[in-house]
Length: 84
Image 1 (spheres, one colour):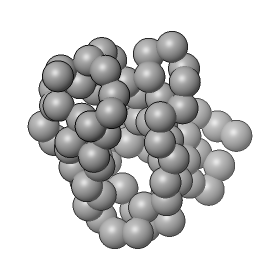
Image 2 (cartoon, helix red, strand yellow):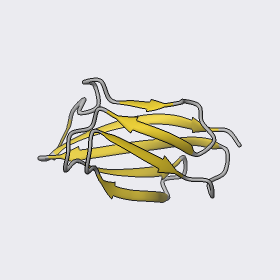
Image 3 (cartoon, one colour):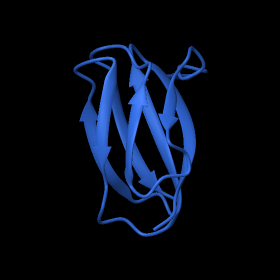
Image 4 (cartoon, one colour):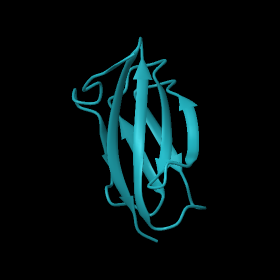
């Protein structure tokens, strides 16, 4: 498995920072993504069904989080902030 800049091609998390409700855009269909908190605990795992994914994480605390996406053996990571 190689770590590449899978998220470099126009992937965004909006808004950032956010309150736990946000939209991920620019991921290809069938890309699996996982959201981790700053301590590495898995918060959410899902496979993208369309180019825009609405995420609602109202249960999470304020802090830094990481989006990790993987497809065809490539992995990309992006961080974002939640402020409640």
